[in-house]
Length: 536
Image 1 (tube, rainbow, N blue to C red):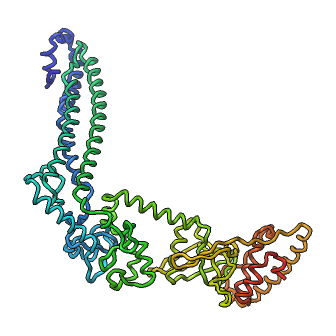
Image 2 (tube, rainbow, N blue to C red; image 1 turned 90 degrees about the horizontal axis):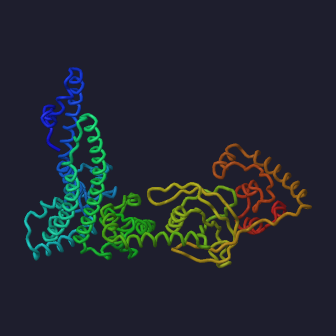
Image 3 (spheres, helix red, strand yellow; image 1 turned 60 degrees about the vertical axis):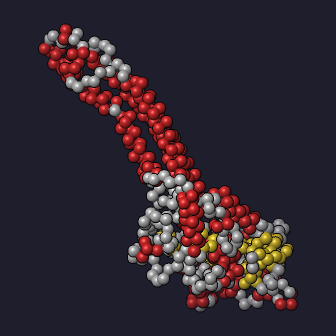
């Protein structure tokens, strides 16, 4: 198709149009058509130049994407490799100099930071120094390729990487881009010279040609977008492989927790600069506020420090298989604890079915127990009183399974739990795990009342309930308010209470406030499976 600049070009190219435009009315009509078609011709000319335009557009987007690649051990402020790396409370790691200019707030998340002296992140600093030493040797022995980094447009931060490696990456990317783009440009050139104006009927022919070209443009644009997606996938793959090659001096042993000797899981860096798994550090802090490596004093705020992002990113990128295995192992361990027939045992007091049991958890072993129960799907554990010294056992033979309904985690790792009794149990076997007791239990249920004895049992229940209700109402308002604050209000009588495994809940609600010793509660209340006998 020849270049079209204005309406006169059409007349010079198609002289037969003069014969069809003899009348003034027709000339006026066709003049409007020509002006409209001239605008279409201008749009076609613009589209014909689009391959170059799109190519420039792609090149700009490509280099912007190259600059947005995964960055390992890079300061989020200066965008350089970390120097004097310091991890702050929120979990972000910055250069020491950049942190000094931050004015007590994180430049990444704007979190307020505590003042005072800060220690270098020991693990991050060691890894960066190891990387620097390795790449310094590679660059000293490898061929020099000036300006390779600038040509690639990727790598101002990892400036110690071998120039040869950079040249290889640049060549691979360039070849791939040129191959895909040239194919796209060739496809555009195949149809850009096709004639559209083939008929003397200028308006219809030209409109049909423009419609065809518009549809063809849309189709080619879709092809070009697919090409872009493929190119960027290739670019991402090449970038990741180059980055992994640059940091291949770091092994799994460099990213292991010193406490559990496994890959760091949810790494947390203390104020003294040492890094541990969050679970490992939490268990250490349960026993004392000191670093397990340097014994430096720690703060209760170390319980709630953020994940060390720079290490978490490096672990997921450099050793993804080991990280996935570590996560799977942690999940399996939690499932084993949850599916185990053994229940963790909290040795404290006697609890009762359907009755609230508030707990203040401060011992290290029970902090661990509480955390594991909160992570489980059932949120249940066993509560048992202490056994007599003469029995030789640590806890009583019977108890109640509790379910956590609410939990308040204090800053120093303690818990305030709101629990409710679920079922009575008797112990079949005893064990121990990570410092706290466990037990294999069997649930206790009341004996089924026969139909002929049910009316008598219902009469006894009505008498005892009325007597208990009168006694509760006789308490001083201050005493009753305190009782209800601790264990709630007296439950109402349930329908068909005789079919429940533990009988009516109001009877168990009375147990904590009746003047009965712990041993009497165990012997005469828990182990009696007849509601009638318990009432008598």
